Image 1 (tube, rainbow, N blue to C red):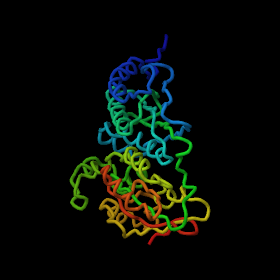
Image 2: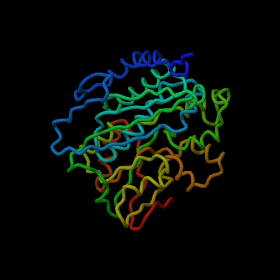
Image 3: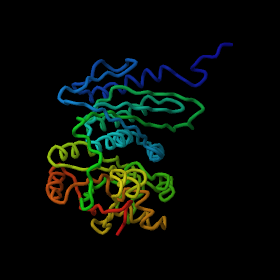
Length: 339
């Protein structure tokens, strides 16, 4: 008796349908650099002609266990924004303009409609960041993922002129750190978040009086994409360094942009901590330092500028709709000191 690929759990017809459903979302991201069409073995993208000495900057990431909330809420149209955001927010820290993105989606049994919803979110993230979605992989892996579960990840490639690379090398003691506010938890720390809020969808869908909203809505808020605001800022202000506040929070991410012998002092009273983080600290019993080493604490990006450029930086960020705060300053030493 013959056993077909479909008998083993892989239905190629579902894959074909998924591709058809996602085509319109993919094409909506195309920019002038895109060559060819979806369905090729590789994605083609022409190098921009307006960059004199181009350097490519690449970043890859996933969404982590935030996916669990998308799955139990059966809401899949925003998680792709997170996948894009985690990558493009990283590469823009080097001053790079995102060019293109590729995604990876893997599941046990493929639902064409579900993968199309995820890709819809990926396409939205690409449009927000100006990146073209030029390809990806949809993998059906029976017996590997539990029923209904899936994973999504991706990578982005951007370009920056070699003379305009931002790497923090010129940061000195006395420079100022400006935080740009986040849209929530973003996509880090969800293994702890799920311990604190649980996974009972009936509870998560009930309005929490202290939070002032349904927890599931707050916890599935997409990661903010800062690309356009940052690119506008660096075109007008000399930015010395940029840190994307992801896993490891303030403690691990901010020092990544400092040269040897430089640390910083952060005034945690410089802004009002969002209620979500206050609730999580109460529920977890974590100390302040542990919270700032786990979550973004309401700050998604930190930029470092000279003291005399602070006002211009804040004004420019506000022009692009960002809410920002002067967080602290650099000092001689190492690491992050929280006041």
